[in-house]
Length: 234
Figure 1 (cartoon, rainbow, N blue to C red):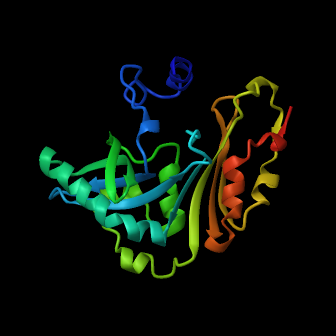
Figure 2 (figure 1 turned 90 degrees about the horizontal axis):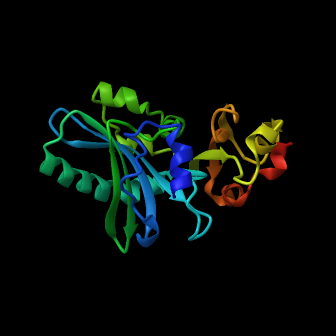
């Protein structure tokens, strides 16, 4: 824990990563969701993004894959909005953006963390633009509210994903000469955007925004368990 905190602490300010308190999420059961939302000027919660955090196993704690779909939005938006309403009423929050992580187990919503004054980091929130045409910052600033019934009407059978191309921990960054983005992209039905990052500066090669037919989600299962070593030249 100390080693991970020190390595990631160099990338984020103390307001994002602090060594003072920890949540042992392994003990929290259920499907994990990441939510971007804001409270409007009247204090009403507006959900603009719901992502299911996919894990390869019970031991997996990575951020490799987040997905969203019509089904994910429709099945969870009512409970998540009701939860945010309770929080907002207690704290009297208005004109306020936030990123929330929860788990839902046996129809019970269990909050994990609430991050104030931001949406999902590292461009993760941008998947809602590719999936649903929503710019979350514009929606907050202009107090716009998604009309989900209209937005989702042509999204049946589609899964939208953000895939984090993280570096294997047992490979030294200085030994990496090349990452084969084209080979990774070729494995997917539709890569809407590939954002490359400098592995010498950041612990990831980049991220993909993809659209996948829900009857071909094996491509998502494959990337979830892939260590990416075959794409790295040393």
